[in-house]
Length: 250
Image (tube, rainbow, N blue to C red):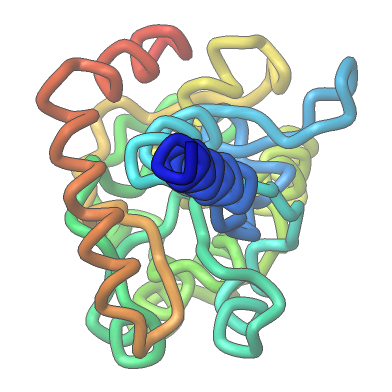
């Protein structure tokens, strides 16, 4: 009888530990912008942030044993929120640049792309380089690699900074600026949805500010980084990332 009670107690304790472990999966607060269609954006039907990077982050987190709580943040607030501990990770269309890697850690690459150039439909010039826009007023998003490079070039009358790509597209659409530069897939998606009918994506343009996208986490957590990298490798290998990209029409 004593042996049976001892065995039963051991089974009960083991089950309790297992249940407790399942109930206390670590939750990552993940910062994503609500305006980066189709990568991260606010779905007005559900009032939740959704998109390519939200779906990819969900699969990576599930594989790594984390729960996810998505925090909508302005693009310029993403890294400050991560370094100050308000969030645990960033999943957005963010290039893993050397300058950013000095303040945050990036996972292995998920995918990469470059900038797109968009102008008014009334401008039919087939631009190849941004040099051809010398002396013009152009736009770029605050906090991106594009704005600094364009400003440092000294080519333009003004490089206006914008919080969102949609704001830039409205100004191009209305003729308030000559042209603007932003993440190619986001611009292509917006124009394909006919959200800005007077705006044209310049398909002849050759991007020079390309980069790789990864998930950013705060420095000093190599174990978390290793878990995320292992999960990324798995969801790449089994086709889940490809399926998500296809789902969003990219």
